[in-house]
Image (cartoon, rainbow, N blue to C red; front, side, top):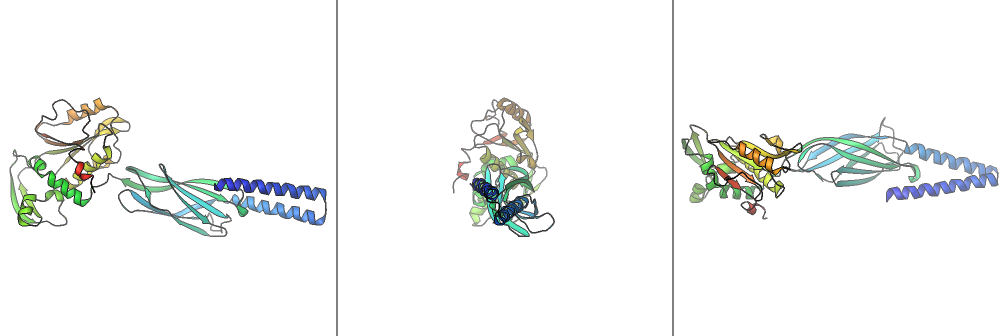
Length: 341
């Protein structure tokens, strides 16, 4: 709409200028020529003011939660001179989102702008796109400039809120206890103590806590650590982000007290693969080749280890996987209670 008004304004000024030229040539008087030169000078100044190239400086961004950032910046002249633009229209883009700010700028040395929080998708983001629409004096001769605003933000999957996290660990106690403490490996309870803020929720001994009416934690004196593999099997897009969030939450919880071998199976760089580090939570996508993903899962199941697999219920899995006693599978149906509230 702003650009449309500018175009109409230009047409109007061109019409007036043509009228002034006709009047000057028809009635060649001193007043007519003065009017012609004055109008020409005003149009020239308006055009030159629109050629002014502003620069973006003092860029600052702040991550306010897991996936939102606030961006602030300053528009100013390259050499610190006052801006001759009548106004600037700023649009900050990311994916399909757009945040807009309109500021008057005539003779201002600096124009400061702070945008509303912009939500970022999971992944690594190194820049945002800024479009600056401006107009010269009298609101004519529009100009558009594009800038890349540098940022460095890693957006990991959302961590489940603490109350749901506690419920998750409580419900999984019966499942995780034999997985984390294999009977093949000797371990002893060193002490039972009160829960502290530095302790992970996964370390809470729920039976003792319910018996004594307070949260208690068991410290184990292990002679040998039980091997434990945590899998995310992203073979289909069904509930992909939700299940990835559950996997990330479990990984963050369990690694505070145990050595967890992470396995992320899905698409990386547009082909099925398996990755083993936390940073790959940023880039994993649903597997486009289900058969290849199933093959990767099958060859990744190590004999002698316990496996906890987070996966969608309709994902293709290797045969007899559910009959393997070393494999525990959690799908969206088993985890439905995390979606409430």
